[in-house]
Image 1 (cartoon, rainbow, N blue to C red):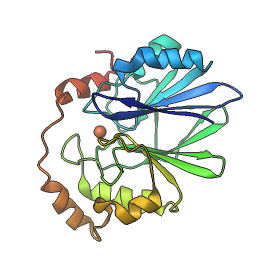
Image 2 (image 1 turned 90 degrees about the vertical axis):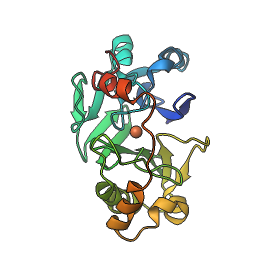
Image 3 (image 1 turned 180 degrees about the vertical axis):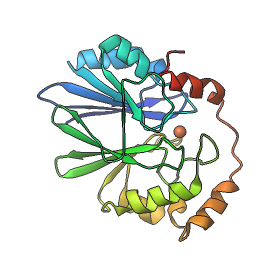
Length: 231
Ligand SMILES: [Fe+2]
């Protein structure tokens, strides 16, 4: 599998490009509109044909490149079916499989950060890769205080869905503010402070006290993302 982890400096967002070496079919996860020219150039240089672009959730801190990528490449754009998207080509639901050449992307509904948050699971040889969006971050978890976030739901997503994977499964998060690029389920199980709560209520009480400022772009980004970045 061809794999690139790309970084958006202004929002500390990770964007992932996955492609099948033989068919040259490619998928973007969480592309950022500001970097559209870089993405198109990279697709051209790697001789890839973009077939699908997906977001893990409706982002509040950056505008998605889904609409622009569809305009430029004719790719399919998809969000989770819970997203209030007016413009995506199609929607995925829990357990759905998206096929990109020989790459199968399994969609896991992992609400909590938002009510439209998904994790994508991909088998790569003998490794399993999880693209966790803002549900599970490296030594952290996404905030749950806006966009229908819910800490009780997030606790269930983390413990019942993501931590049910074996320790050697690789975690690729939606952001990292220190530039840490990847982790594993085992590492997070052991060292992520947000995963050390026994009960959902204790986790929710902790999350309720975080008192974080809203992301700078939130009022622009959320409506724009519901329109695939085209408004
Ligand atoms: Fe987010």
